[in-house]
Image (cartoon, rainbow, N blue to C red; front, side, top):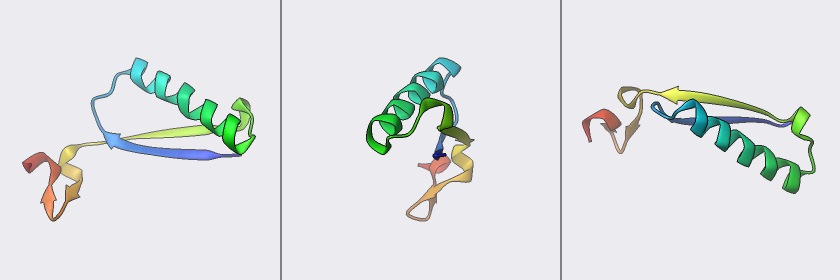
Length: 61
């Protein structure tokens, strides 16, 4: 069973996540020859204060 973890900054709507889930599931089914029912997607909403790039917090850039 494919399990896909998606980490992104918080703020996406439920509708955006639903659309993304459909697109990711379709890609896994088409490319990895899985089934929609066996494909699991976990969304992690990360505050910008919890992520850094190049030594600088995303919330400070």
